[in-house]
Length: 194
Image 1: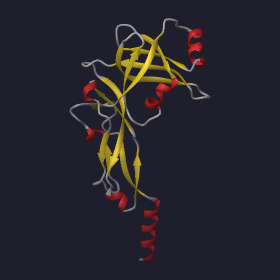
Image 2 (image 1 turned 180 degrees about the vertical axis):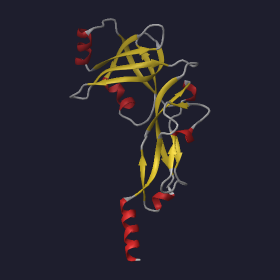
Image 3 (image 1 turned 45 degrees about the vertical axis):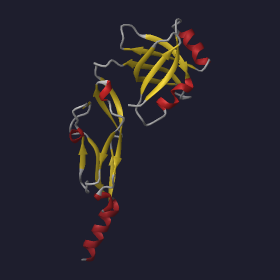
C-alpha cells in the first residue's frame, strides 16, 4: 500500500486556546491512537492534501520533531462546516499483528457485454471497507466487468479473498448492469410495429 509522510510537532499545550492558536497558524491538531497513550501533535494544513483530497487509500508515516516515527492510517477527520478547512485529524497506529479496517477504492476494468448491448452501469460502492493486517491491505480492489450482461450484479461475496475480509454484508451489490430506458422504449416500439 502507498504511504504518505507527514511531518509534525509534538503538542504539550492542549485545550481550546492552544488549538485555536494552532488553527490560526494554519496548523492542524492531530492525535494518534492505538499505542499505550494517545500522541498529540500538529502538522501543516498543506501536508494533508495528498491524503484527504484523493480517491486513493494510503497509510501514513508520521515523523515528529523529536525523531519519533509512527506508521498509521487515517481514522477520522473533521472539517469546518462553512470553510471546509480541516479542524482535527485522528490517526490509528498500525501494528503488524493487529487487524485494521480501512476504506479501499474499487476500480472497474473491461467493457461489459451488457453496456455494449445498451445497458446502464450502476456503480453502487466505489469504496469498500476492508479488514486485514497492515501487510495485506490492498491499494485497490479491481473488478473485471467484461462478462457482465444486462441484469447481472456483482456482490461483495464474489470478491472474497484469503488476505482480507469485508465489513459489508455478502449480498451487498457493488456493481450492476441495468436495462436503460432507451433500450426499453426501443423494445416497446419494436413490439408495436409487429
